[in-house]
Each structure stands twice: as structure tokens, then as C-alpha cells.
Length: 178
Image (cartoon, rainbow, N blue to C red; front, side, top):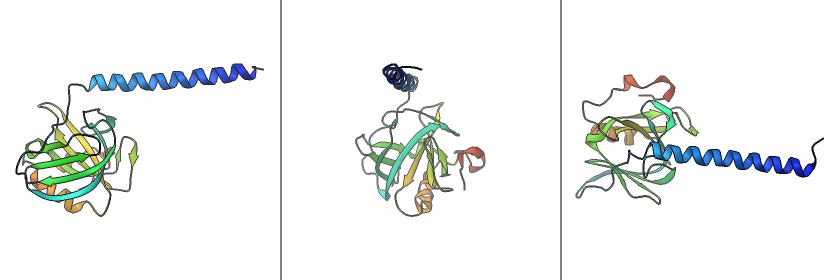
């Protein structure tokens, strides 16, 4: 039988080891994604079409809803406001500078059910696919705090350039619906 003090010490050591592993894994992810950043600042004279209170959930690799990216300042969940403007989407998240996804960066906007750390009712998330750089398309997930997101999605879809990815290319495991 293991003495009680030794058992407690082993449990504490195991807990510290697990926490250190999580810390190192998160730091490695931050270094991996350091080359990617969300565009900041809203252009002058952008006309707001619609504002909605949102919960920012995550940003992932495109069509890989379980592969989180740590784009600055979109690395962490946050409450905030999403504003659809005539020039793109502005994300004003608590504690972070305003992220602005210009219409030229938007690839696709649709609904989703699953992303990292979050599963909701069918179509309960808004998935915004956008170009982080010339070669990297990412998906950012938003959850509207009130009402049906269909009008919000429709306004955003009007901004997506014609060369965007069609709804047919969404991976089945994203829970995306048209």
C-alpha cells in the first residue's frame, strides 16, 4: 500500500506535468501561427448595414473545424459585436482591437454546427471563410446572441466576391448547411 503522503505528492506531480504539457502545447501553437494575423482597423466612411451582438468562438483551418488557429487577436473566445458594412465585416471583440475582414478577403459565409470546443443546434453557428494571406483560407465561427442568423448571413453573402468557394465544397463534418 502506498503511503498517503506519497500518493498526494504523485497526484500533485501528475497535475503539474499535465498543466506544463498544456502550456507548452499552447505556446508551440502560438509560434506555429505567428505568421498569420487578422487585419485590423475599419476603413473610413464604411456604412454599417447591420450590427449584431455575437460570441466569437474560434478560427480554424478552412474546412477543418477541429484545428484551432491562434491568429492575433482572434486566439481566444470573446463577446462582442459584429458589424456588416458596405466594405466588409468588422468584429469588435471585448479586450481586442477591431478586426476588419474586407469584402475582398471573404470567401464564403454559411452555417455550421461544430467547431473546436463548441457544438450547437444544427446551423447555430455562422462560419465566415476568409483569406488570412494569399495562400491561407481560414474559418471564423460566430454565435449570434439573439435571433436567427439568416439575415446576417444574407448580408454577408452579398459581400462575397463571385470567385468565392461555393457551398457545395463544405466538408460534411463541419455541420455546414445552406
